[in-house]
Length: 168
Image 1: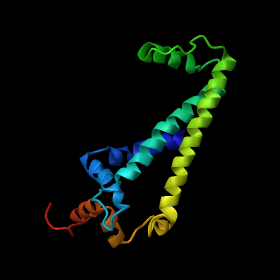
Image 2: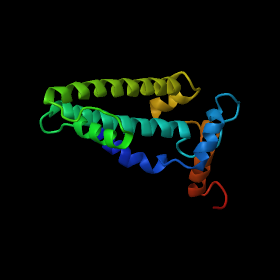
Image 3: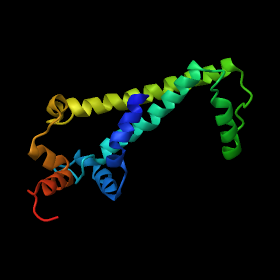
Image 4: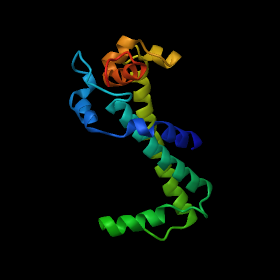
């Protein structure tokens, strides 16, 4: 959970969605074409992974805490009450601790499984699914040409800061 908080603090500023991300998504991230859509430090696909990990990681963390402390931290009775009032559903709102744990266990397992699928897909793309990505994972650096192809706007920002990219 600490890693989740640290990841959020370090990278949230680079992962705020913007109009450029919509253009990247409409172009399919360059999967179907030879050119890659413009991107800053993180493209829309990376931002989707970031927010998936943040939201699902927070959910797994909370359900895990609920499993650890079922008497002190029941989650589902209150959640079901909100869902009933907003959505007009009829979920039970008077749950015994063992029922809370059953729901928490089910939720924890499902969300963790979905999160694993997202991470496995991310690992595939970052290893064999994209040329040059595996080397970048190994040493944390990419070739300048690779960076220009995949994150052209970020390269331009870095070069401008270094005085290599012309005027700002």
